[in-house]
Length: 358
Ligand code: KG4
Ligand code: ZN
Image 1: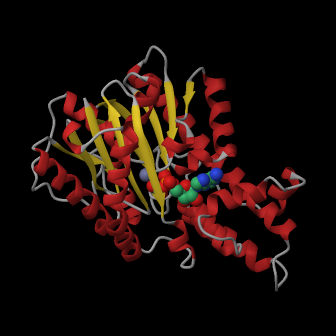
Image 2: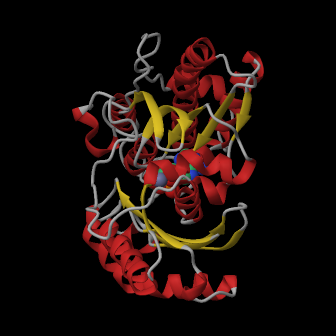
């Protein structure tokens, strides 16, 4: 079975072909970062126009790379939400058009399910597992119970962790996207303990029983620290210290929440080999990975992070989610409506401060 996946929910246009055996025959991602950089973040209208310009070229190139033509496909999977709706519609309509022309199944994929199922593509992970999905668009703790069945145990109440990196970086005068910039500068910090003492930051939700998270207070604290620095051009050593303090705090906050979630996961599911998966763009952060690895080592849990190219947004994960759904006999009608908000766990209470991120 060969499935084409299409991803256009944010600022990456992506197309990929994946087989039901988990072979990635092609995997192309076109980043729009340069087009958004001048605005310090993703501009939805620019993103949608760029997807229109490129999606057909990427699909054709993904087929060429795999040595296939559209007639060889067994199905088309496209992200149909959640995300920036203008972009989502473009990938979705492109997918539906191919499915209609070739008379093959169309699979409407929840972008979050793409992230959630990636460790099954790359590592044949078995259900259930605990998942920390941590990106610019989402920060959630979920239990993946089965294809199409998730329990959301925690989510951000306001900003996503990646958004916090990005907004804090902007306050420090660093370009978009801020996460990699903060990581690079943090590595220049000469005295980690002194940096954290000099720039104390709050630990939102720490110790709370529920597993929700909050990052907007961290961003506000960074703003105050920046305002207290000497006026004029920020000194690189000051920014490096602040970058270190922020990165360490975000890693601590995520690890504290995951520690609580792991205890609950073991108690609820008694899995034979408990696994914690971290995925999403922020999973690229070495401090976050190190902190979660340490937590897993302490608690006898297998830590798993997909390779970086499959952690951040891509279409292989969408094609794979299509494989998993189609194998279960699930496909969708061609009048499926794009969903700007599409929670993986429909029973989880909405968190209004987080909007579509919850
Ligand atoms: O998953 P992703 O590519 O797109 C979505 O948001 O869905 O994640 C992008 C986010 C951005 O906020 C970016 O700053 C963050 O991931 N990010 C990082 C790092 N690399 C990317 N954050 C911290 N450290 C990094 N090394
Ligand atoms: Zn994503």
